[in-house]
Amino acid sequence: LILVDISLTDEEAAELAATDIHVVTIGIECPEISSVVLDDAAVGWDAANHLLDLGHRDIGLIEGVSGDQLRFAVPARRRQGFDEALRARGVEPSTVAIAAGNFSVNGGAEAMAQLLHLDRRPTAVFAMSDEMAMGALKAAREDGLSVPDDLSIIGVDDHELAHVLDLTTVAQDVAGKGSTAARWIVTDLESDRRELYREVDMASLVIRGTTGKIED
Image 1 (cartoon, rainbow, N blue to C red):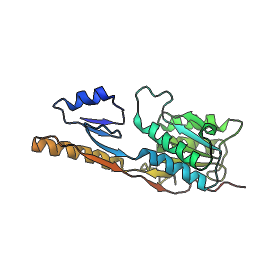
Image 2 (cartoon, rainbow, N blue to C red):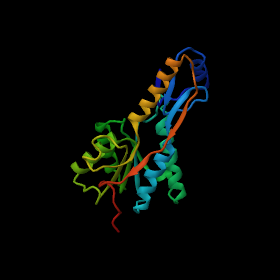
Image 3 (tube, one colour):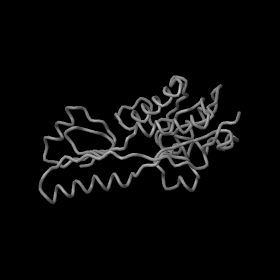
């Protein structure tokens, strides 16, 4: 059984660990269960610092789901790292304009439209997935904005279309984490035992053409 990105309570984790089911979590850490995770706080940190390095201070955020009832762990950690980077550079996170994009292209476009119609429009936007960033890019261009001259956009994942769209992103090896989780389960099944595995992956900033220095 592979669980992806949904946080478990201590009770839920203990119950799973007590079963005979071979379980690996992707994106969440549980002491009793094998896990392969991305340092998602570092993802938010890297995205924020990239935009700050370019001179942006009016920054927007397109998060996944507003009022996350499924307890997805990843967005919360990305937001944590994002906020910490802002504070470290003297920018108060409460000044960030936020809209929910539901981790989809259409959702990202709708969220971007909301941000563009604010009285104080952001000069840069961090979208928590490349799909939402692609939607944001579409909405910005439909609104007559030049990216990155008028607006910088950065996503996460390095989607297979990211290089086609020249999208700046924080890259991760999504397929690699899935392969690692599957390999651990197969290894345990073949050896008829349950090992406790741990792996923490780091993302990498890929600078392309959708982010640029703010004009004075």
